[in-house]
Image 1: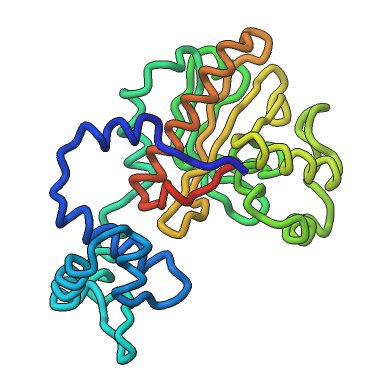
Image 2: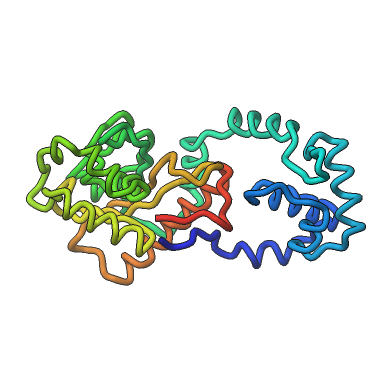
Length: 273
């Protein structure tokens, strides 16, 4: 699976003037959150390349603020104050609202339909859609609409995060009735599609939902780096050149990345589909 990375993130970061103490404290918290063992001062200094004296001062401050807990063996774990931020973030974040706020900023997809879905069992439920006049004539995506996950671009992106065993268990009774002659009709073919999705970093519905419509999808990740929503772009299959498809794929992955960042995903460690 390909690594999810925010386009131009490094450039943006390098152009921003960071406060050294805040940046170092954040790195300490990130490291404590990611490590599988409780780190000591020496561990933090060595792993982060920060002087031990500076680490000591920063950790002491973080402990006083309940952002870290110093354990009896002089190692550190995350503190309870972080939960206040986590709860507030969850209350203030709405993927549908964030999705809508990006519509006007994305100008690289003329003539395309953009949709946002969530997974519900073996189906995707559409929670937002911007239909274009072109694709609207073949299929009208709307909020509340439900379609088989196995056929849709966002559904395939969701399913690609499952193991083959989990996919087989989900479709133990077989795949849904095909919507078009192009709809995937066997578990083996679906598993191959999901494997390809993981490898290339985006999903494809090639006329499986509606004949004449091709869709490209990507997942929106939450703070656990797990998919909470899917975004897709739909357009006429016969009118899209390879160059246009490449541009659309780049755009939809950029939207997914930006939404994932706003939902709290760890972009340095997240992997898409």
